[in-house]
Image 1 (cartoon, rainbow, N blue to C red):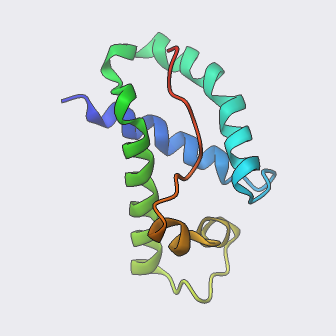
Image 2 (image 1 turned 180 degrees about the vertical axis):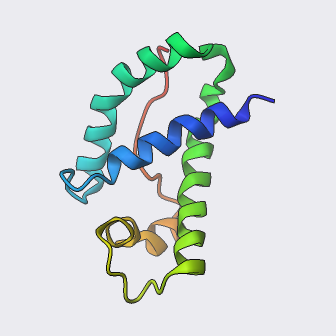
Length: 112
């Protein structure tokens, strides 16, 4: 089964979006990930076959990563009193975005 490759990629992309130097806006996070993606994919494909990636399901993997982080933060932290910058940035407006089924970052996974 090759689905873990897609989740592997989006885990890195979510991490890029959440870096402290990237503004917490949807536009800034998408821009940072879009700038990172081509170089990252070039190296990733050198080490594994791009055919292992399910390109048409990458947004589903992004959604899965978002929901899993949301669940981990709720299970292991107090989301109303977060001290660390990473979960603070991630949780900002997260519930509303999840309820509205808004994509975490707007990316076009094609051309790889």
